[in-house]
Structures are given as C-alpha cells and as structure tokens.
Image 1 (tube, rainbow, N blue to C red):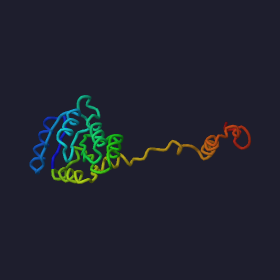
Image 2 (image 1 turned 90 degrees about the horizontal axis):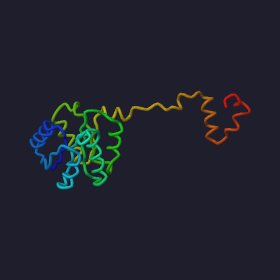
Image 3 (image 1 turned 60 degrees about the vertical axis):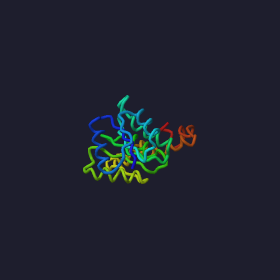
Image 4 (image 1 turned 135 degrees about the vertical axis):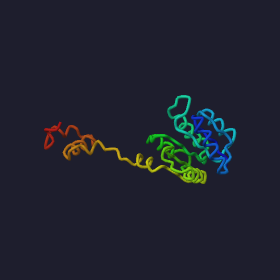
Length: 178
C-alpha cells in the first residue's frame, strides 16, 4: 500500500516510516507540515494518508484541515488521523468529510500495539472507519439542552411566544408571566 505520512515530529515521523516499511507498505512521502502534505498527495496519489492533527505552520489544526480538504477534493481518499487529544469538532468534521468511507481518528497514546495501528490503517485503506473508543465517547457525550432547565409553565409560555402570541401573555392565566 502506498502511504503519504504527515507528522511534524521528526522522531515520530521516522519511526512511523520504519514501522510501515517493516510491514510491507511503501511510504511514498513523509512530510512535516500541512502544505507539504497537500503537495505530496497531489504528486504521489497515495492509497492512504496518515496525518497528525497539529502541524506547522500554526501548530493548531492544520493537519486535520488538510485531511478534510483532501477528502473534499478526493472523496474516496482514505485518511487516518493521529492525535494526542480528542477534539469533538475535529473528529466530527473529519468523519463527515469525503464520501464517508475510509476514515480513521486514533489517539496516539492509546495505540497499545504496533499491529493494532497497522490493522487500523488497513481497515481505513479498505474503506472502513476506525475511531478510538475515547473519540466515540466524546462525540456521543450529550450536551445539555437549555430548555430542560425550564419549568413546565415556562415551556408553555415559550411555546406561546414561538407561535407569535406574546399579546396573549398579558391576559388570562398567563398574565403574571409577561
């Protein structure tokens, strides 16, 4: 499998190149920033991309932005994102990108075995989806609905206002709520 790898840490990048090569993959480009990632994919047409989320030049979300852009330009391009942390917005944006196939989001610190990483890469390259359970947990964590804090009577008044009947709040049973 032809791989483009993007990781700003030279030590980690070289380690991943060695690991992927050892497992029979061809790393056609190993780069350290997001602009180089975009150029490498254009030049090498890889089977799969592996990228970090935070990369130069800004060390914010450049790697993820590049991954989302690549998947918009090449909807079937498999991309596996590696990250140190979970960002719900990042993960959701990545999982919604492209054609919905061949995508992964793994946390570097939670990959317990090299074989686990290689298997995840193969799954993503084959069109599957691989997401760390912690990422799933963060994505599913429910945000509290602000309407849940309203009393039944307050919800009733809000419904009347939503119907466009604020004048009705000044008379009848709702006169004290206006």
